[in-house]
Length: 249
Image (cartoon, rainbow, N blue to C red):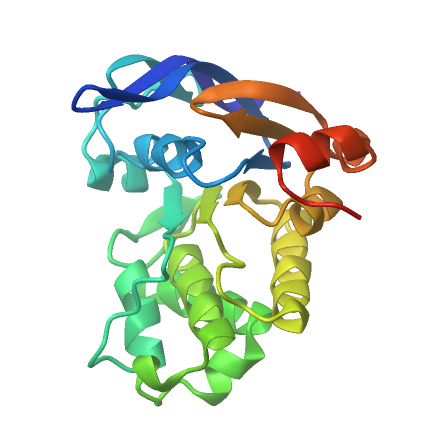
């Protein structure tokens, strides 16, 4: 299977502290790959380095075989990599739909099968697709985004990233601060997004829920890969869950 993303010997420093210590990862096209671990394990640093928001000390990040670790974030977005950030970062003062349109800023007109598709047409199609995943956002499209519930704001953050037509969708802690029923709904939607052909790299502390939808997972501890494998196998490894992820069945 073709790897849409490869990370080779990645190192990330914050001053004198090495947050990520020479990790290797692969993300096959069309899969969900999870990066798990406790706070301070290096998860968010890793995903932010992929989107260009955190500077890489050394190593390589290859997207479709091309290095992206020295590119500006907007150039990485233009290649088809979009991130839904930790904390959602909803834009106050804008409606739900205006927040979604912000995610489409990089969309351009394209030619497909000899037919030109305008930017306006593409954005309309992306908006309809996003609303198909999150009908509640369509219901609330004229509502001020900051008045949404926590779960709805998380849906909006993911929807905004989808508006950039990503081939690779990066999700940073999508379950953070949400009730269990809301988490279940969001993870079901993430699974559907994958089934519709997108590749997803998800960073999470909620190991159990994530391993239920992931194909493969990496467990980080103190900036190193402590374990990796098929998600279903890791989910059934109680010693691993207890030791590195702080969870029990």
